[in-house]
Amino acid sequence: MKRLISCTMIVMLLALGAAPALAKLKTPGDFTDTQGHWAQKNISAVCNLGLMSGMGVNGQGHKIFSPDSLVNRAQLAVVLQNVFELDYGEKRFVKQPLASDYYQDVDNQIWYAEALTLAAINEVFDANSNFYPQQAVTRIEVARAIHRCVNAKGLSIPMIMLMPNYRDMEGLSQEDTNALVFTSNTGLMKGDGQCWRPHDRITRAELATVVNGLVRLLGVDESYDVKVTSRVIKEKSDIMETDLNIPVVSGQLDSGVLSTINKRFEEDAMNFKQTLEAEVKEYAAECEAAGYPIRPYQLFTRYQQCSLNDDILSLYVDYYQYTGGAHGMTNRQAYNIDLKSGKLLSLAELFKPGYDYKAVIDKEISRQITLDPEPYFEGEMGFKGIAPEHNYYLEGENLVIYFNQYEIAPYAAGICEFKIPLTLLDGKSAIL
Image (cartoon, rainbow, N blue to C red):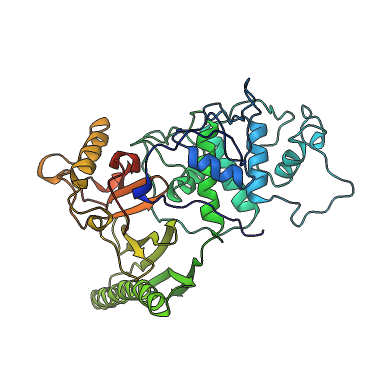
């Protein structure tokens, strides 16, 4: 599959503010009913790439997207065909396959027939005599279809090594659980607080956001001179299994800057590996002396690119280790890199001197915790406010503040993330 071109970029915080009304709509992603909508930039991005399209025009002749309308099965089939470029794969047919070969309620001449045929060949949807093209789809149906597309194309997509703990996962089939874990851990479809809402129907704006996330996962933005790939190290012995995905930055940057960036990624991964290797050797020696069985240690790293523009690369690496016991531990390390110097940018360095970003962020995090306080520690162990060096990364229209396991909540709560809309910062912040 050819590499997809992502147009997702972090908006310069200084430029935030209401966009002026457009007198004339010019590009595929310009719709009269998405101006000021929370998903406007995602909608514009995926439509400009040809992955989604509008819903015609209104009475004044202006193009509309209908962002809050529900997605039906026919629309989903076309979008998945556009994103994953589904084809026949290794399958061969005596005659040209048609949509009606798979579903009796689909006209072979209708606009979604070809996409549905390819989806059927790749087993994206369940096999039934009818497809019910106008039926609205739920979040779990979208997750399942995406996961099946990934498997059909044989794609390997790194993701964090965490089992999410949503309250409404119970009762899902194993396949749907796997799909939920995949879309949650890749950041495509996360839950709201402690619920994932598998049976909620999905809107066109929500689907556009998911699709723009897929663009980020499946490809690179060739409009930039920088890209991120990975160096993989896999080792396995009787006492330890290692599977490292180390980010590697390349492109038209100063050679010294590239060296600084990549050296940091390499050293952090190797230090993690060497520390665990020393521990497991000591543990193995103690077990051998005492005649106890050895439980092999595990070490995995996975990275997630979150944002990239001409000035900043924002990504995080999840460092997972299992050293015995009931479960492993994941530590998330974010890297927000100034591409001009190679320097890591602290949270405080994102903002103009004198701007009380801490008060704004603390208030929003407290508000979100109040909406669902049950998972979090109370009192001295609970949320007490952020620090100038607090963990964060940039993603789309949000500044994401996160807390690693046990920082403000029990292990079951996982890594706690709080998305702070950039619009809350009143345009007073600035990326240096």
